[in-house]
Length: 287
Image: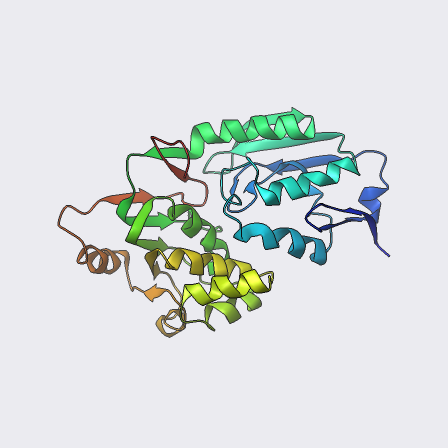
């Protein structure tokens, strides 16, 4: 067996770690810090758990993404992050180096040392740059993942859509702009995206039976329950029309169609780097 079973977390996630990693004399985690749509943030021990774990462990941990506290920018009682960090009770991490990047993928600052302290310091620093306060949620949000290669497929572009949900009001419209020239990007994701006509059923089904790949489709489905989603991409119109997304041939046409639903003074928020930007309400400091 190429893995070592150390224990089960209180949530029932098997802590199965690659044998080479588990039996190593030293374990050092490298990574960059970004907002993660259900683990709160990337980085930290995620490089080992679930990075060096099994599909079963990943599936068990990620199944908690449906919980309210499992959201971007939240580490407080986040069940996904708490579950991952249970690993350190059974396997030590000697050192981590996490970096914060700018929109051009240049290193802005690095954080090193204790796996939890360095990670938390890096998360706090990320907040200063990419957690953006807003006065109110907008009628229309225009969002991009940030260009190539981050928007090569819809599977990756979902990340920007998930951040945009914090900026749009209930009943509003999110216009997602991304090449997606490689299509859906994941077979199971495509199966779910083209197999449902409403987001409510998607979210109900993922709660009953969590499936990797399908989980991103369900995340899109959850957003669609609160806002209309329009997609401007290189995907074929007929392909997009098979999904719960609305096809738009251009950003201009998408905006004109969306704005026709609201008053002339409709509010608009533009997120050119939606994959890394997290909107938050000024009065609460959270999403």
